[in-house]
Image (cartoon, rainbow, N blue to C red; front, side, top):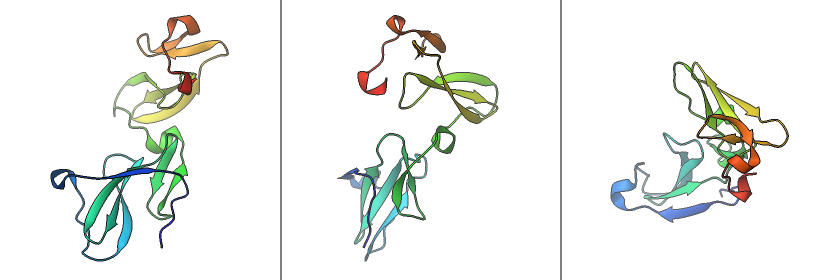
Length: 132
């Protein structure tokens, strides 16, 4: 029996999108090859796409979604340095340096402005309320 510790949404994929090859019998989860928040649920030869909630990643060993840090799941360019929007919070950003992600926070009263790639006054930043 498999238990997922975080509520997730799954959907049946059309055959051309069902990347994994699932065994004819059994049920199990396998990680998505390019998205650490996603996985495939295999059930008797059929694959279903699933995705962990924001701020969580799929752990293949534990077969469940676990809370994650940006460093575990964020993909930075291999060279150079840049500031990128945080995936779940407008008050934070991801500083990429030589392929490594570093989570940073804006000072109080400021939000990350993805256009300027720096912290800015709240009134200058459009941010979904759920991400503040």
